[in-house]
Length: 253
Image 1 (cartoon, one colour):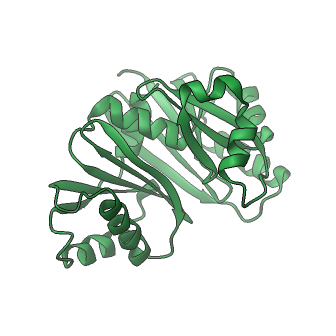
Image 2 (cartoon, helix red, strand yellow; image 1 turned 45 degrees about the horizontal axis):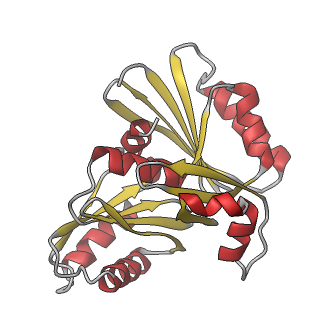
């Protein structure tokens, strides 16, 4: 991989900015949003784009990963006789969708990721970076993981401000993809134990990798310490990787 790539990981709550150049990956800034009006989002994003000169010709590519917990994976052929919005509404029938539905194909697994995304997000970034790659964060991470290695049983926890995106891979198969709210390390431990129990994988020898976006570390340190004390958790060793998220996203482009 060559050239400089700019990364925008955007959600309703915050944006994470990073870049890669050759094999070097670096977070730049995490910016939390103070309110949720379209005008405010656009104003703050424009200021960040100008601040870090993302329009510079030194950037060969721009990647936008939108994250919303409202997303679902379906077999690729299921979309032939339906539409994304209807399938998403079926999966989240207990709540009203806020935005339009979009989808990304994940050819590595012959599945599609359907998710909701505000129209202004796509229009804002396409107007400024016409060739930008836009995907759901889960799409980019799944493709990146399966393009770099997915045989060893591994629980990936990608941590945003309010939500954790959990991916459990084993023997080159995606066993689980789920988003959930969390407030501390105990929530992460609970969901991780539940996932491994449901998959009958507690006795496997594997890894739990925490990916704190933009370098947050307090929760991951507490998780690692408390997980090590669990008898049932000894077969899965916990570790933290601070920039691997960017590596996965680069691998799927």
